Length: 554
Image (tube, rainbow, N blue to C red; front, side, top):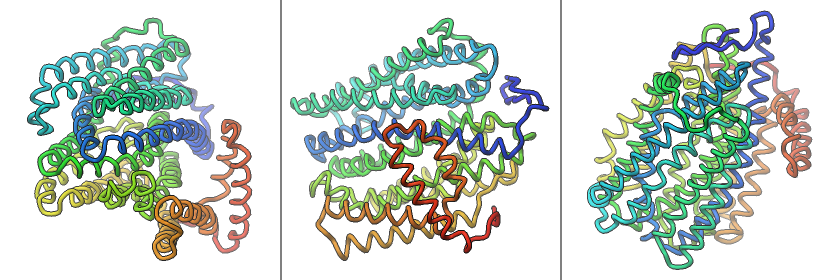
């Protein structure tokens, strides 16, 4: 089979006689997502735990006012890091996955060295520009005069962060997800050590910024070493302008999408800087840090789905795409939806346990932010990745265009009318129509749709667990903060693990694929094996009530 792309690259990965059957392809896709995603998720969990502990100490040491200032200053370099990547991370993952099976392994290295070299150059030039315009950024963009030096320090992150983003996407596409997990953990550990040391030594906001920069620098350097030693490109720093052109053309629609999204975030930050106090922004940032946990469950999907979909032809593998899209929605939802629901149910106790009463507005912000993730069972977290993997990034442009236009149109009047909570709600509300536009495109162009009956079942199971947990901690509390978190968290997990198999949200196929990944789970293997036995027992008990292979799709 010849897998082509709109950029003109074609890579022979096998003859038509040897092509696996559709069912086998679906199993291969599911196994790849399960095993690769599991390794990435473990790395992200470790990194997230480290960063969460640091965030607690830093936020408490700085207080809402200084923590809000720190968050505002990081807005511009974060925006610029995405604005200058030109879609290269997604392009690199796409083409690397396509050429990885090619006998000419050097092609993979050439793509990687070209992308990394371009990323370094873009980062260095943009850093110089940010240093020259630090006064403008301080006085106009974030409306905080006198912070020029802090803005200048924060801009140093640009080149290493672009390289980090590139390599985080690249390693899973060449079947080395452990390297991506490793640099994520290293970034978190270095950031933790430097930030904690400097903040506790009374370097305040400057110390927090320097720690953030240091984490990206060290992680990107380690990533480059892994690239040089394990992938072994002929020349580590080199640009093949033909390959760069192909990547830029492929990634242009995705880049425009990312640019629009980051522009939304930047515009949100500008409005907050203009219409909110540092303390309110500090509360919002605290809530956003909790949502970082949810984003870490989505990140492995981004790194896994793009290369996985890249291996299929939209015309020849239409039947396979229909199946793997549904499987992708399932795997994206198993963790993301319950986590979002748990955050909503336990937001008050979660913030109080870690930050006390000082961040009083954060629980409301946190619950509102978590709503954004409850749309996973209708394809919210899979649509963009599937389109990008198939080389149809312009459809992602359509989705993000709808979202960006709606948000930018109503952001200022909503902010003036309902404040920061209103803008958080608008951010999600303007995204919902975009998701349905994406679903319509997926169905009409590729025959890909969601399993509607399964989506309803997972919503029912999660809603029962969420409402029961919320009622328990609010009407029968053990104590505000950690006691309620322990009670509510335990009850919620038990309910989810029980209701999912009983309502056939989870089935034997999912457990079979998870078991196939246990060999890589190390110390987690005994606990996961016991959990799988429990789930199988419940599936067996519920089997007579649920007919097999009957589902409504949309």
